[in-house]
Amino acid sequence: MKKLTALTLAAMMTVSLAGCGGSDTAETTAAGTTAADTTAAEAADTAADAADSTDGSAEGTDKVYQIATDITFKPFEFENENGEMVGIDLDLLKAIAEDQGFTYELQVVGFNAAVMAMETGAADAVIAGMSITPEREALYDFSDPYFESGVGCAVLPDSDITDYTDLAGKQVAAKTGTEGCKFAESIAEEYGFTVVQFDTSAMMYQDVLAGNSAACFEDYPVMGYEISQGMELKLLDKLESANNYGVAVMKGQNAELIEMINTGLANLKENGKYDEIINTYIKK
Image 1 (cartoon, rainbow, N blue to C red):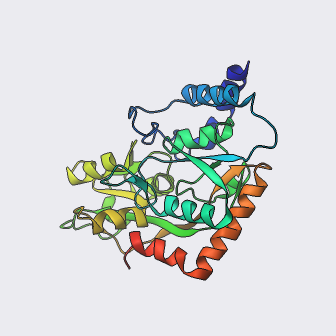
Image 2 (image 1 turned 90 degrees about the vertical axis):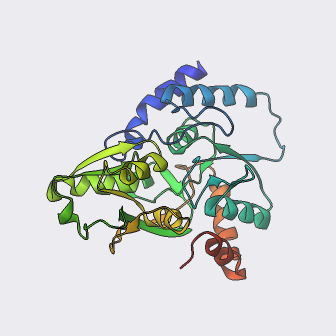
Image 3 (image 1 turned 45 degrees about the vertical axis):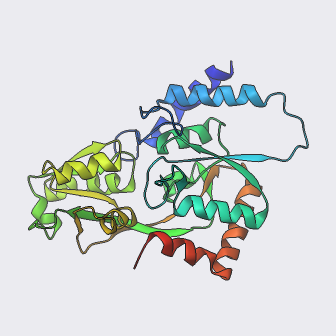
């Protein structure tokens, strides 16, 4: 019965994940397992299994929050050379938890699967470079913004593309389910280009580097980080769709977690820890 309920919820929430014409099949997998996409049914199974495992838990025990995240969305979450999950999101979460004294377990499953896990009850919250939008605010409660981002456009270093008008008749790349994909599709008809979607940022970048796509659209700090690490692309002098990132919980649920996150975030900004974390990953 739980699996049937979870599957029903998964079907109902599909629209919320179709940010740019399709669900985000981002890099989905639990850490250390397969890299295949996590489907809505699989996420529903995970949620049902989690519900089964918690049925017998005793009242009054210390809560361990389940917080889901993406697999690779540099510089916000990614695996370093030591096999550790790091990044702005994860370093902030760790510091906030230490400041506020709460315990959490991280579910590294991919963006689409992370949101599905939250919607079906397998996770309490999502931190994954998630933009705060009116559509999402209708479904989720967000923390105070912890990062202001925006969509950028990157091309090859020797490209003669300087403006969107130069993309006419060409193909551009975007990662499924992201604000970059949503923005690219919103202007595609106006500027006469087509959008091809990829499950991962790495696949998207490779398509541009190989010359198949003329440009790619993604959040500028993500591309800026990759370029600073040696990726041979350059950003156009444009920043679109400025947006804020926040931690999400389901509407009307886990208010105590959001309150702790907001308080901890304010403390980190006051004591300088916030700037220290940001400056570790983004050089201005």
